[in-house]
Image (tube, rainbow, N blue to C red; front, side, top):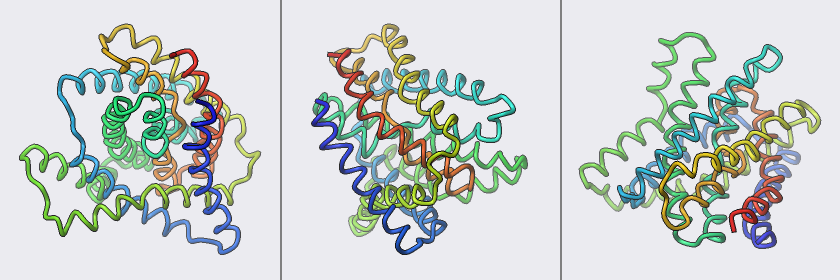
Length: 299
């Protein structure tokens, strides 16, 4: 399993990150343009498409969502308190978001397919939608609230395309409507571009980062993401009557590395983007060792 995870998940991710790293070193990319493309184009397109494509079965979905939300709330509370002391408070928002948001997409989906087949993919797809909804609503709100002007925060939230992608997607699903094929084709192409462009952006950011900077904060964030998060999941699972492999899948998904979307938020709002990029990088590297350990105890 370790070899499969490394070959099919870790190597593809780091190959694209490495391309972004090299491009930044050679050509000095415009990070603001890359950030805006991700935030205002590719992310809304992906969320919109995923919401329309998802096959949410109420009987299975409710339990999965309830587990995810409770796990999220506990991890968020622990992180927010842990990162509140004065020495780390300036980095609290980014550290907390990097702890609670994990990479359910380009990392989680192939991992679940390898470990649990189609059942794993269907579960992680539900988690991915909930995660994106929280990331681009609550996450944006937290980043915006750093400015301390709540009225300005609310106005700025209304300017975020992701919010409209979420509401339009919900409305179309609720009324069982399908957008015209001519519209969905270009939106689908944009959605397909997110993973590559986001990882290229991450690689470029890493090229600008100082490897030894904020090492203690990076270590703490990675520990919360890869160790504490799955422990919380293990303690929660007995309270749910999951059938099949859903329980183990929920535990495994809780141990995924930091989401690239957390970095995109930090980059867009210029809030400790360098720290976020290192958290994504190192949590992804170290997950190549932590994920097989989790799988060993689940089997």
